[in-house]
Amino acid sequence: MYIIVIGGGKVGYYLARALLDEGHEILVVEKDADRTKFICNELGSVCVRGDGCEVATLTEVGTGRADMFIAVTGDDEDNLVACQVAKHKFNVPRTIARINNPKNETIFKELGIDVTVSSTNIILESIEEEVPTHPLTHLLDIRDRGLEIVEVKIPPDSKTVGKLVKELSLPPESKLFLIIPKQEKPHVPTANTVLQAEDQIIAVTTPDSEEALRTALRGS
Amino acid sequence: MKVVIMGCGRVGSRLAGLLDIEGHGVTIMDINDYSFRRLSPDFGGTALVGDGTDEELLKKAGIEEADAFVALTQGDNRNVMAAQIAKHIFNVPKVLCRIYDPLRRELFSSLGIETFSPTTIFAQMLKEKLEAEEEAE
Image (cartoon, rainbow over all chains, first blue to last red; front, side, top):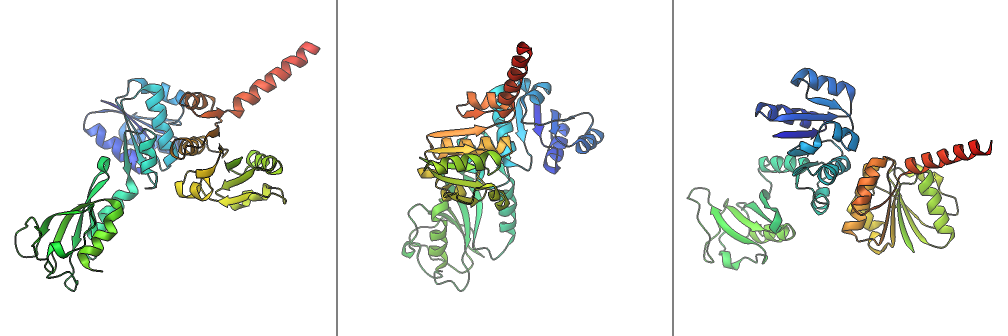
């Protein structure tokens, strides 16, 4: 596959290296002369100095025959425009944009970028998972349905310990589908399941009712 | 008419002043409050510090009720992004966008954004001026 990468920073460089290892044909477009030289020294002649949003540069690097176009600079607006130029001017079948500001995720989707990767969100999520006291952890987004799968831990001193599932005031958009008790095997909760201290609950919910779900399960 | 202008440089501040004098409601945004020094002391509109590609800030600037949005920062890409947000997310009826790069301008005008390239306009003007003088000689 011929893949063009815009931005030769840390992300661009390591991405290009990984894709080269997999046997793809790679070209990196980088604005900075020294950085371009560095990448060429490390990876061979796979980096061209230029502006990845400029039609002239993109013509020169053969964007018309690219199978994939990935923009990973540190500026969201540059990534957006580069992908739009690739898509609309050169008809690249698949465009991927890195997003630095998580707020831009929906905007990029609405403006027609095929895939967005929010580096800030990914870092946040990984850290969240490592923080043991965090009351609600995001496990997975089901983006096109506006749903997410989350994990909630029941603290030992929670008011909901000993309550039945049907007694909880769960938001209507949320559904519990697995309880992982501390000692026993995981089981699917029913209306009469009793919550126990340190249960891990896996649930599906919407971003808006996340807070209500957390309150219903933890009682605070 | 209610107008939101992004970028308080020479052009932005001047446009804001002209519209304000004629009684239009003007909100001008810039990421640097030092840029607002360019506004005339009698400017009656709103000056707002912030990034015009940020949805929340655009809402604060009144983009939802705006009749027009003009993107005039130094960055072509920032202008393009803000103009698209105004047009496609907030459905602002009139969106104008400055793009210095003539090729990029061509592309985005074909994507339905009303764009202006001062580079093309000014080069053309200078050329005509030079040719007119040559003919006169």
